[in-house]
Length: 494
Ligand code: NAD
Image 1 (spheres, rainbow, N blue to C red):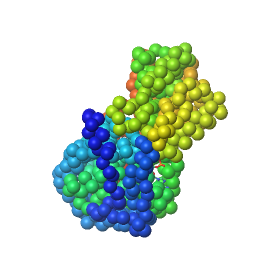
Image 2: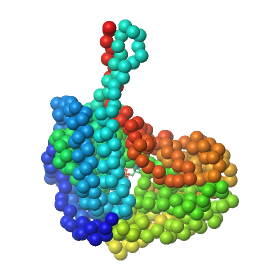
Image 3: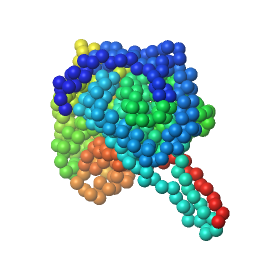
Image 4: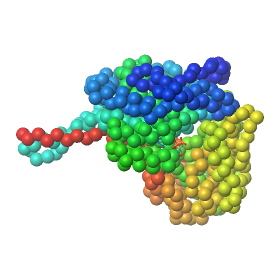
């Protein structure tokens, strides 16, 4: 990675972007546009189309026609694979451009953005491209006088709604398996992170994806997102974002055509440290990165630190010094550890949680406030609050910012009780040298992902999904494919 290259890219003006519908760049039907503010310095970067419900209906109609005429779904798997592999190559060839554009749009530190955004999106697309011609139908073990065939068919038109924290990575988790299985897609990016997804969709056209197969409509969730959710012509809705929006999507489905809804929602993931952790210094450093990378805007962030009481004070002091050593600032500098908070509204929300934590008896031992305000950007010091009781707001509600809640525990049973005492269940970790305890904790903590003596392990080969109000269904791995196919059975009398 080369700082001078990043600096050259950040100096480039960003063109205005509009929807991508049926292979064409299209303005909003009423000409509406939304400014795009850069969280780095609060300046206007560019603008995107502010979509209307009519724009969304146009995009859904384009996807429906494309699906029904088979221009993609009826192509031989090998042909679809070729297009998707070309798309991954193009994303990789433009990785630096995409990463810098994304950081200017959403504020993630560039080192992480390069790995987690274009790099991971290309990897995900390649994974499903390689998988798509290895998926077979089945023959059921029926009585010998019939043949029961199980076909795996695409679902049809899939609506994809994504958040702003990792638009390309999370977008690809959904677009890649959906397209690989022959579906057509209408994508609705988050208001504050549309640019790279629009650029990635342009690259898909360049790779040979037929027009209408992947459509992107930008705008407000409450307008274009709602129109997508309420459509009678969308067969499945896949979503990553907040629980409140997830709940609305289920309502939209119930009020319209009962489309399938798959939700990846938030978390309040417990990072549980026992006194017998193999390396407490490493556990402390990891506890800091588990919550503070990307300014805490990570769904699986280890936002609750549960520490065995006997080591609590020393351990927390080490986490605090690791936090203080993290450089917060310009996310386009390679030596920055923590970039900007995505928007001013999000920053204010984060600060509100700190105020509430103080009012509920928590002690802010480091951070707690906005910093670098003179830059015009939205930065927050990594913040650690101790003395957070299991029922406190900070222990119960997701901040989605750089705020760590610390709670002591005395026994394994108490650690499990506290860990499981939220409505969420997305991720978690246990640090211990006791193999039996490690396995017991993996079983006992109600969550979709559990780490042992590490945090944040991620690979395209393993599923990511939550339990409880962290969602349903899984992204990543071959398991994700289930969301994008229908099983059709055929009975043949012999
Ligand atoms: P959000 O729910 O506000 O927005 C997510 C998306 O939904 C955006 O594109 C938004 O425009 C759209 N939307 C908003 N209102 C809508 C409506 N009424 N109808 C249809 N669409 C609508 O969430 P956010 O603030 O962008 O993202 C942060 C949340 O995402 C956090 O809670 C975080 O934990 C969660 N998240 C989860 C995962 C995971 O894998 N489980 C990953 C990343 C983020």
